[in-house]
Length: 407
Image (cartoon, rainbow, N blue to C red; front, side):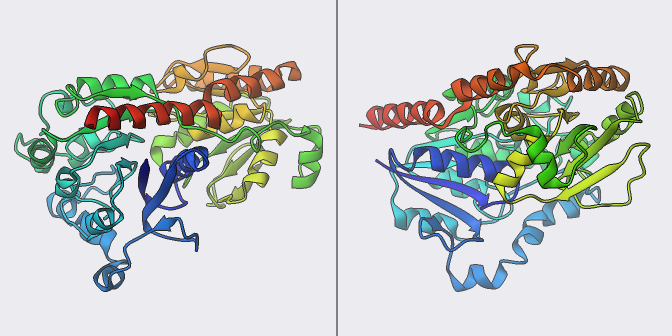
């Protein structure tokens, strides 16, 4: 069995991290390689497009891919991808000749809509956002247009039935309607959305969570980690993190900011990773960790903190939550998206009704003061539900089932 797993970026972002972890969980069990549009390492098992045409255009591809939206709407705040242009990665797949193509995040030039429709092998597609079943947006929020047909797209600030989102969705229907695509959703919430969609309502849809290496992400001594990071051993630390944590409005920093006003400001500090100091003024001290590539350091950061806050407006299966719990640190988040599928027990953390900042502040205080007796319980929960062996076995069963069906 020969698997090619594909993601636009090799390292940066939640989808890249999840893709790498799926790869690592499977690499000793199956012949698997990774295809990326933007390669950052020298690893032989990671493939990209080496053509002269691609290398010439590489820096322009994200801008070229964004042209349709920019021509239609000047609003750059809401993420929207059309993926109408092909940049040659289908040829790389065809030369490699995998038995199964496992897609993840495919925008910014990896595959066009037509590319995906023209593959003649089984496709497994792990959804890290809603784009595969919408007319171009990545976060559906309250919009349900994808259930029947897109148009009047909020992401485009459009009031037209036949807008760009309607066209993009029609292209997906045209090229994917009869394709052998199996959808994998990391959360029940995403699976429910996919099942309602006009694109995937008749497709096979499985729920398989993103995996995590619980031999790496495990509890460390809190006070040793604090000394290592130069933190006060007596303070209460609230952790907030994501790629571009302060810029990405979906991550909900504005809610956390208001919620922290409700805490004991004399003894609380905020730690932010994924963003540098942007001159944010807050009534409590902030320590910025920047973008953390070293996962050992990330484990120390989680272990040093008392609670991880995830005030996002929309989430699938946030890596931050799983990582935090694996390190023994409880979490607090809004009852949105896939978060309820994680926080099933009080020892894991607490959920807050969207977007109640007063309750968010109260529950951050409650959780940060909770007993440390549940540290190993949290790690054990993650190991039983998200560990490498658990998740990789589910993917292996799916791969084998698809190839059996093909034969």
